[in-house]
Length: 142
Ligand code: SF4
Image (cartoon, rainbow, N blue to C red; front, side):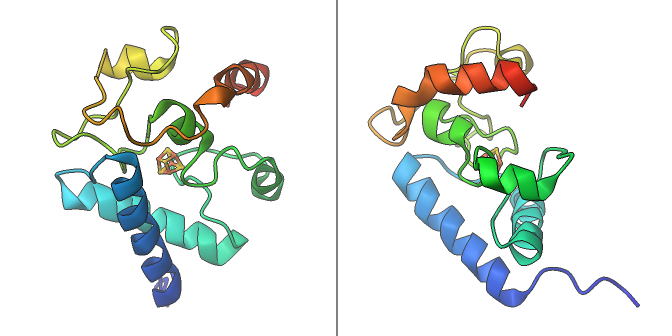
């Protein structure tokens, strides 16, 4: 039997999350709707499986443990601190993730160069937690 996919309820919850968070953060979804749909499906699957929208673009040795840490529950710490979405769910109109606020040695800067934030007055509600985030990123390569 084929996999039925995520529940309708979870898909709707994630679509609402995406609509609300693009508005709040001043970002847009990717110009290729298939990119967005793949991430939405992954988030909805995690919502069904774990009860939380854990980022679908990463590998986790233990998903339950990861839920307790909270760093990768969407919108994740990197999004709320740096406005950087490595899944390309929350991006600029040209489909690039914002990298302007990332530390210079962050892999996102290597991958995309400097991408300026077109709406600097929006988002980054957790920007005061950047030092804490960097300690975590180095301590567990996360
Ligand atoms: S990188 Fe962060 S903001 Fe982007 S989809 Fe994953 S959890 Fe959400």
